Image (cartoon, rainbow, N blue to C red; front, top):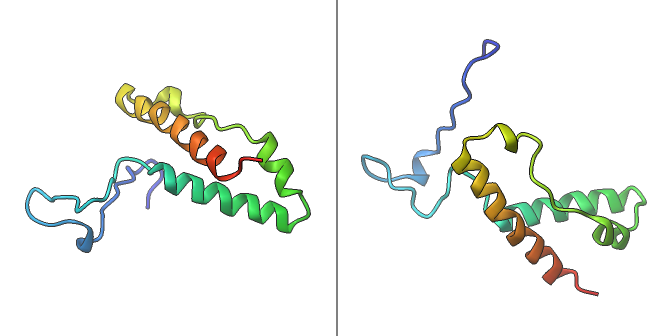
Length: 97
């Protein structure tokens, strides 16, 4: 792909139906909080496998927006800031001491 080419996401045919395509319950314009929590868990487990105490990771983790949020369209940035507290709440609920 040439440098600077636009990156266009095309969902698999099994994820849509009709014309215009219905999303069949998928959300293609962002990640669900559960997806982000699962990714955090995976990364925390990876660090723990390298010798970092998982409890320390959980106690010191900070959920923040991407550094690119400031250059997003306003509506997309708003979605980021709506998702952040949901991710934080889910992590706290899973790992209460």
